[in-house]
Image 1 (cartoon, rainbow, N blue to C red):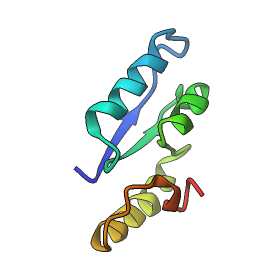
Image 2 (image 1 turned 120 degrees about the vertical axis):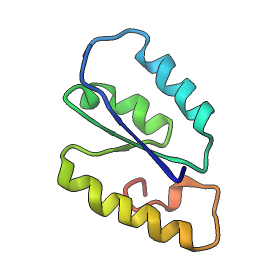
Image 3 (image 1 turned 180 degrees about the horizontal axis):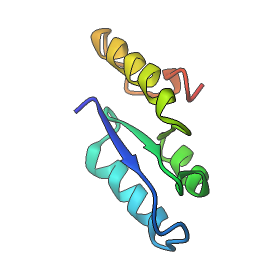
Image 4 (image 1 turned 90 degrees about the horizontal axis):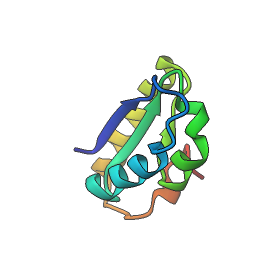
Amino acid sequence: APAVAISLVYPSNDTKMQEELIALRRMVGDNTTILFGGRAALLYRETIEAISGILCQSLPEVYPCLESIRSQKRQPQNDSFAEHPRLS
């Protein structure tokens, strides 16, 4: 899949969430963009950024992000997430 979207809602103080997000990145690989949203997502911002995830603070933010991912997938692959407009 070119992208995976995760809503982090509850619990907002899960001490194992950092490990779980890192494991998720390993499972989906570097070529899949992970979008994060939900009530608790801001609390995990540091980890989301560390795994090259994209934090979407509202549903309207998701659509342009998905379109950007879609247009990037049409172009030659670059394994770096640094090229993504939300991460540069």
